Image (cartoon, rainbow, N blue to C red; front, side, top):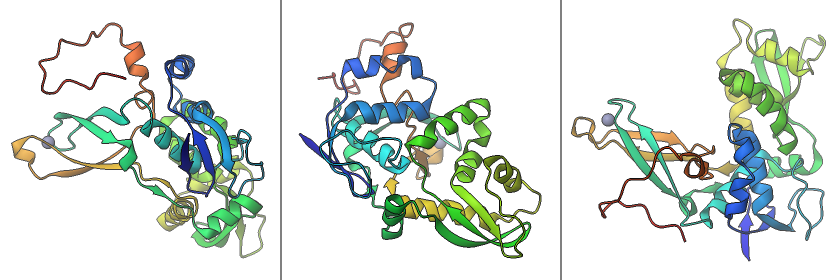
Length: 274
Ligand SMILES: [Zn+2]
């Protein structure tokens, strides 16, 4: 048994992914949002302590209720006990473009707790309210932490337009915008998406939404620091967001039949899978 303490305080009994889990994902390989949810389901044996959620202990969690922050953290903790627990992927230097193979030990990824306000919100579903200035004057936004139930919507819209993905996530987090001049509140996603893109919409609106939800929900710290090996770039520190996509789940390994691995010369050979 392996215990995973998630940002909300929920505790899961988890197991490492096995080959059959990987194969179950091949038809979802292009959809990172669906992968994340599916892999959390597969690696979870049962819920030991539901934290703020309404489902009981000793059962499978009802994933539609679970925050996306918890789902991502579960992925990192399950990956940490799968294979050798090291996520390998390539990154290009921002400055010279040279590729570097990064190796990140998943056990070193920090899991940040949700705040008390965030935990209460997950339990009560009462929105987190913040005052904001908008292109239409002062207002209050009612915010919610995104949950498993929102992943299909994010995936569907993200497929159509990858650039819009961030805007969609932010706008889906807004339940309503209430204007202080008592004009009609905005509640539909369509309206809010349109409103977000209005000319003159202040940056502070985006910052408030993003920072409030990041702090409230917690989650894994998915940023890794690294340095380019090119001597002309020496000491150039860079930050990279860990891609929780098909590479994270080792699907590349199953799919890349055309690119055979070269015989290894020893020193930098990848560890043999257990
Ligand atoms: Zn470089």
